[in-house]
Amino acid sequence: MTDGADDPIAVKLGYLFSANDTDQDGFVDWSDYERLISHYLNGYGIVAEDRRAHALRAAYQKYWSELLQQVDGVDRLSKEQFVLANQAAGVDRSRFTMAEVVPQAIFDVMDTDGDDTISKPEYKVFLEAWGVSDLEALNVFLELDTDDDGRISRGEFIGAIRDFFTSPELNSPGSLFFGHIEH
Image 1 (cartoon, rainbow, N blue to C red):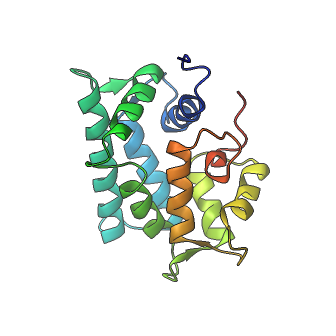
Image 2 (cartoon, helix red, strand yellow):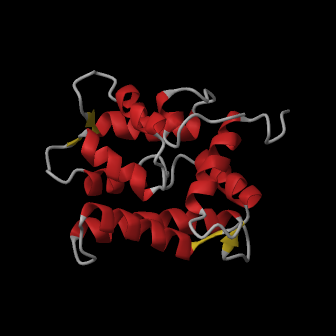
């Protein structure tokens, strides 16, 4: 049995924790997700009353609720709790899965021109919402575009998010959303 430091998925979830901890207080709570949602909406110029804003908020609320169900009696998660809660929530495939619901809502927000694909400029706003300005991370766009058509399809995007949560490979395209992961 490996400890969390050796588990590639735990390593990736640790990176996700850092990206989700928007106020950098060492915990993730609902206010962190509210800030992240606001970054998306502001970055893409979407008003709070838009159906995509409602869908994004609902998806994140469901995700947050699933995480809290994994840790009794807390309303904020430390890095260790966040990693363990994500791993536990991901085990039960019959229920909500982060790798499906939230990415669908994010994709709908990102696809500003409604062509059911993500362009490089649309993807750049996504990176900015996460506070990623690393040019290397923007180059991940090319790796996520698995059919080399210059755009990321819904299937490519959802597949990459699923890969982030399930693949033990730290250098697979889906694992590189926040740049290369140092292990």
